[in-house]
Length: 65
Image (tube, rainbow, N blue to C red; front, side, top):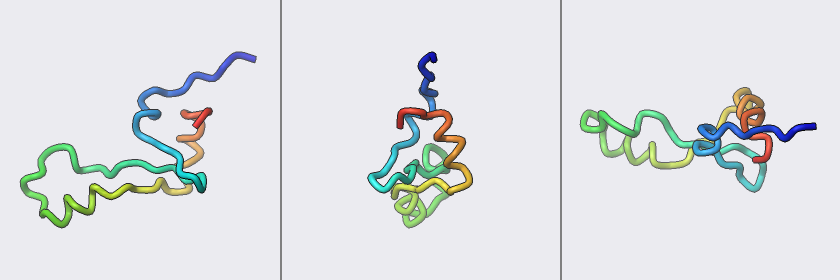
């Protein structure tokens, strides 16, 4: 049985928490930030957790996470 390759792009974007949930960053915070309020940008800094329906797809890309 061959080893399964990890999707390197996904490996840079997702981490697993101690409870097994998948943690990721928020969208809309890399550019065009001048029109966004400070409050909105501060909220986007906080970690985001993946929805349960999206977790199986990420788990397939990251077999050893």
